[in-house]
Length: 246
Image (tube, rainbow, N blue to C red; front, side, top):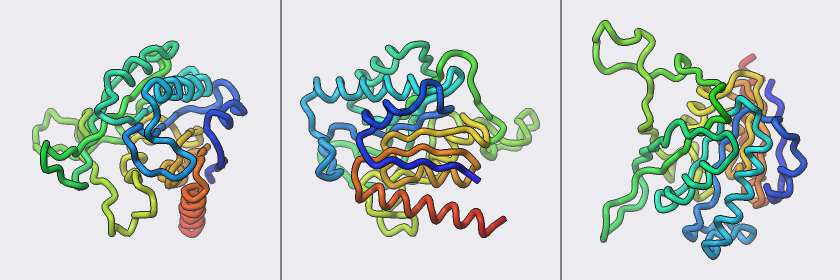
């Protein structure tokens, strides 16, 4: 059974309590500084210099906590790609393996430009020794070429995974809820059962649910009480479902 530790508070303060090298994988989906409404405790419209100083702080903290053969998946907005890429590159021993394009479909349509339907995700490793379980994340091939791996093909760095639409049974009251399939792929690829996953911006708790379903341990941090309660409930329900299936 997965071990779950949930913290309500500021990730910069709480991560100070976590030991160096104590987690095997980090998934971080921080505020993008584009004016989303996350509640009274999150300023998503900072002065640019303040935002990047804050970004540098949480990146440095997650990297300190990551194990020597661990990996990080970091999500941000397309308008921040250049600066965010630079900040990740400055992490000690960090190797950017992929800039994944998550094609999420759906969402609001634009009228004066093309509608935005993707988000970038950086796949970063702490050096050259790291976990990558390719055979566990293969997807069916669309051709019958005998030269293809019979277990399927590499998903590539373009992921077409639908967003959690309003009205969906999975949908909860969070403005940027990640789909479960996205987190299951990340966790399955870059960790093993029993490993510990950290999400410093837990939000609605999708990373925690994915950890329960895949047999990983989870550390989640969320500053907004409303979202913390949603995450806590979703993760508890996922654990109950696992127990019922045993």
